Length: 175
Image (cartoon, helix red, strand yellow):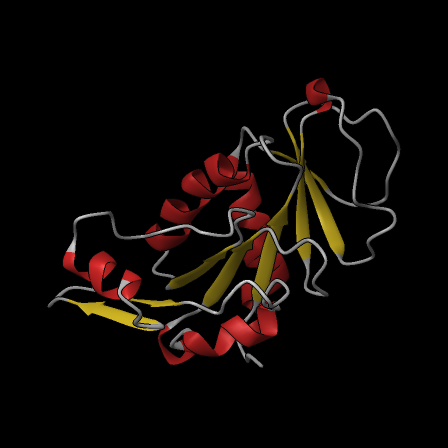
């Protein structure tokens, strides 16, 4: 488990979760916050290294865990096989060095029981996860919503507004 705040951004594919996070993270960093990030992907076989690189070749030769390190970063790839379900967020959190973080942002993992901001674009004509998901605490949208809600509705074109919401809701209460 974790003792620092966790906030997930959820939406249907193509809605703009990553684009929004790319705007929010630098604003949080500018405030001196140390941010951890966990991103879900539906691609079963993804690589952070590329064919031809030594780490790629060694992993494909049979190494089930491959750690690549330099003086400025390290990355761990663990092959868990295809027989497993999606790893739960609780299983991934211990891999982050939480002593060096103030906030963990998560992209995806919509079925996990953590607080979520739902990203929604009415022009895409997709449904909502709320009100069926009680862990959705706010909606970030680029237009007024077509339905009524008591949840805060944040303007996804105003990332500073979303950062202010995160600070008020998560960071001030955690100190």
